[in-house]
Image 1 (cartoon, rainbow, N blue to C red):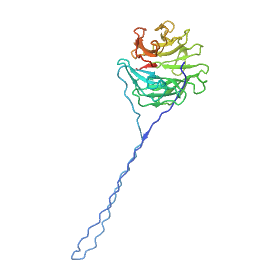
Image 2 (cartoon, one colour):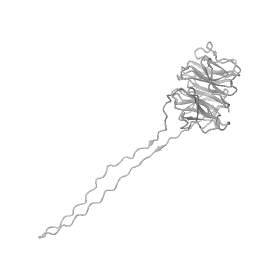
Image 3 (cartoon, helix red, strand yellow):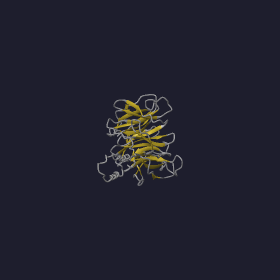
Image 4 (cartoon, rainbow, N blue to C red):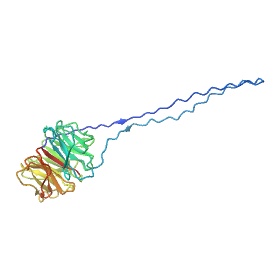
Length: 342
């Protein structure tokens, strides 16, 4: 089971401007006139010109400096994953794989243990957890605009379908240590809400359905870890799987009708239909290797997952019926925890 946790914080900046006015020039001196042959009354003094007051100027209100934005990604689907392929094998960071071009790009988050990437629904951001302090962050796929979301024990984020909120697990309040409950927070780090609080049960690995109607999560509340469903407000909790083995890593299909997950000591992968959990179970892998952390492609046709079937932890891809197994990475490093972009 993944370590449970949570976090929060954001910064806005304001820019101020000011204006001023110029002084009015002094009136000119009158010129001398030669006296006429006859005495004339002395000239009357010309009154100085009066100053016309300038209309008052309005001081502009402070304007909010907009945060940098990035356009929604419109290229081929990408896979975010975790690897220690950098200069330091003890440092695990986020990387992006283009499976069509077989190109890998490092995000360079600056952390030693950046894990569990999760794409926003529009492909503009990636949420992830940092294991050093167990906080949540977001980052653009080009490695810019790193933003801290939580400042407390947090882990395993997943986005709401509209991209405004994150659901995650945490033990930071009244829970026993390492016995997480499930929370929702705005991506800005505001409005933290605990939606599921069962102190004696570990509830974690929450995943929001793409249609927004349900949240999937793992729990040991029945003794064996299984998959459960609930409404986004934490109501109507219902058990989904009832297997003889522990279940982990449940992920929704893009149409919210199916869930792929791992089960058992060897982590074989299964698919189950949400509306027919007892009659629809399909086993995708069956071998001595560990297959885990599956993720659907945006078109619902492929599943990417991590496996040690090559002797190292690499990324693999297959059809949703378990056929056409393809190795995506092949190296001596750990490549795992993949998440496919929308």
